[in-house]
Amino acid sequence: MTNVIRSKYGRLLEDFEVGKTYEHPWEVTVDAGTVALFQASFLDAMPVFASRSFARTYGFDDRPLHPLLCLNLALSFSVHDVSEQAIAHLAYLDVRFPEAGYAGDTVTARSTVLGVKPSSSGDKGVVHVRTVLTNDTDKILCAFERKALVRAGKLDSRPASPWTGARPTPELKSLPHLPPSLRLDHEPAGTPARFARFFEDFEPGQVYLHDTGKTVGESEHMQLTALVRNTHPLHFDELYCKDNSFAKTRVVYGGLVFGWIATLASRDVAGNALWDLGYDQGAHPNGVIGGDTLYAASKVLEVRDHGMHGQVAFRLVGVKNTTSAAAFEEHGDALFSDELSKKENKLKQKVFEITRTLYLRKKP
Image (cartoon, rainbow, N blue to C red):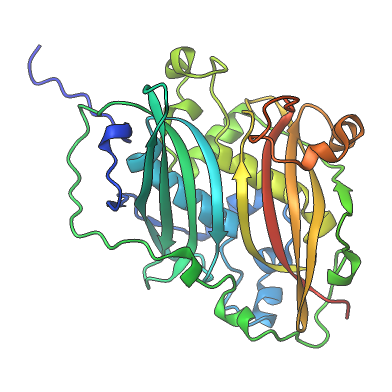
């Protein structure tokens, strides 16, 4: 049969060129419905993202877009050019949220290739990219680096990109960790607090075993994957997964696992947080499928005074199909050690790990 066209997206290892920037084609207006659906899908206690009146008290125009919504949009937009052919997502590095976005913003993303490293076996390799999400006033809402494991070869049926002259992404160290309204380090008098734990309540070495779990629904995870425009078939195409998934079925998109684990922790550690200063050294040691139940645990790594506020760094981990209390009882402090660096005694229940730094209110 003639005139048959089959297009593929993403790239194989030899398609990546260090220094090349890809302008991802998705351009999406984040309306109030998207904000409400995302907010309602996660048990997040951070008031600045839930309450317009609270956000305005701290100088925001409205309640800002949740940082993890921005991360999921940026990561998902990049799949079209970077990882639709990837075997696995390997790492999150230096995730920042320099500016606040709002419902009504139109967002786009671009990624710059920082490194390409073939494996010794020659059949795959690691691609390192830096991605930024910007709104229609060119404010950077989210920026991060990530690494993906990609099969070797060249993709032979990818349509040519119409984008030319893409701007390189900025160095992450040049970007602030706080949006302008919080850089003033002010604390409005009489601002209510509705959850427990302020900056002064945290000490290095504390372990929080978050008691609420989350069972992932099949249709739920696919709907949210589509909402943020993640096009990797591993997350929604059952026929593809029978041959290409380690689980032989659809795998839950990692950005959603990230979001659920972070927000399962929020009532215990983030109810008086004003912003996520960033995430670093993150990974998904094991996959999640529909029907799995997630739990979270946090260990305080560092506390640092920040004038009228403070910052607290946690090692945040997620486990599946066991409670965080049971996992800690079995593994102790090893629950918080870097899973991907282990050569033995790996924890099959651990599905997420990352270092998270929160900007927190002090006690009134």
